[in-house]
Image (cartoon, rainbow, N blue to C red; front, side, top):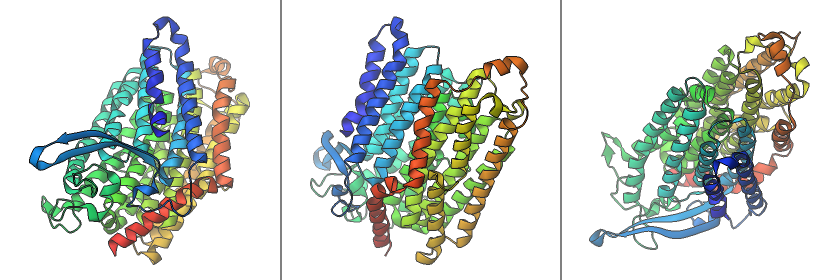
Amino acid sequence: MLTLLIFIPILFAFIIVVLPSSARASFKYITLLATLVQLCISVWLYLNFKTGAGFSGIDHESQFQFVQKIPWIHLNLGGLGTMQADYFVGIDGISIGLLVMTSLVMVIAALSSWEIKSNLKGFFALFLLLDMALIGVFCSLDFFLFYIFYELMLLPLYFLIGMWGGARREYAAIKFFLYTLFGSVFMLLVMIGLYLSVKDPATGNHTFNMVQMMNPANYEIGSVFSTLSHQTIFGFPARTVGFVVLFIAFAIKVPVVPLHTWLPDAHVEAPTPVSIILAGILLKIGGYGIIRICLGIFPEVASSGAWWLGLLGIISILYGAFNALAQKDFKRIIAYSSVSQMGFVLLGIASQTAEGISGAVMQMVSHGFLATMLFFLVGVVYNRVHNREIYNFRGLGTLMPKYTVFIMIAFFASLGLPGFSAFIAEAFSLAGAFKSSSVNGLLPQWMAVFGAIGILFSACYFLWTLQRMFFGSVSLKGGEIWKTALVDLSTREIIALVPLALVVLAIGIMPSLVFSKINDSVLELVNFTKNIIH
């Protein structure tokens, strides 16, 4: 089922490529069908995902479900043994929520893609290639396979921004590409080092198996990344260097301040569907990588550096909020709010408590839906008048009442109003950070206090934007022309927004929809980390 989930988009992309250009009107429907099939498969996986005793053990493959493992690259190296890389996919509690979120976000992005008018064959083929890579990252349990999907995201995103973006699209695309490539090139070196350090106990060969990399017993004594090794790289402990390199690669994706500067440019220049994918899914790959790889493979380094991770989380929360307050561009406000809200993910991970990591995963799922909703709504206004300057609009609530209802839902949900998903996520992230000071002593309590202040500032920039753009008498820079163009939501737009609003409300009222699936995996990760450290 996972293989089907991953490669369904490529099948539909092939159909689009072979169809003649005269059938261009059907490309958007084919893409939408592909994403709907994926959504159905991911919901089936969610409903059939088992929880409870017997599905645990961070260093055993039995923790993962729907596993498929097929020999892929087995290269005989003579006396040096065999190079082993497998097609190895599977999901646990941390993956399943992100898979469902990704599938729904891709459906909304596909609906949003109907605004694209030029070179439809190229756009939708790249869109579906990106879809495959995103799903593949969350399913991969072999580091080599993970890296291929991780790198494969770069190509379609570069062209989707560079060819269909705004006025400065080339600059934004190149900046995004270079930032991400910088992190992933050094990730490749650490991946090779881990491969040469770990042996599969069943075959005796070196392996890229990430599950085997999580078990210290599988490391060769004296190897570069062995927990018993005292090897250094440039005078620093090898495992510390490995953690830092991988963390930087994933922190660029999150993005963590000061590695965030690609994000506002990419968002502002990207077309709406690509902005939705960037904020809704791509940022979560960074958080997922930190949990799955940095914390899973280097738990003792993550523990010793937890204070710095927590500090980076707090800086991101406050820096993103202050920048959002200063913006005049509607889309930039949402972009910087993403930097702020993803800071809670890093804060929760740094706490290394069950509450904090659960809150971090919940925040990734919640923000995926809310960011999708917000960027879709920004795109609605931009598509009508091709302007996003906040001070050029006033009184939109009178002109677009349905639109205003969804904006209010998205804003109040994002600022952490009880009853919505972000409240649960931020509350658990802060609870984990607060608890950490007394349970494991990793984070001081003042970090939780500053995180709470970040929520206060999020209320400031969201409510201020609401007051400036939507309330008061109607006043538009474009006058009657804009007034005529700013029609309320269409049926297609309502169909896209209603599921997002219902999901964030459902998760806020019944957080067990997510927590029940992630609980086993989070507890095993926390217990495993404690055992390794002690």
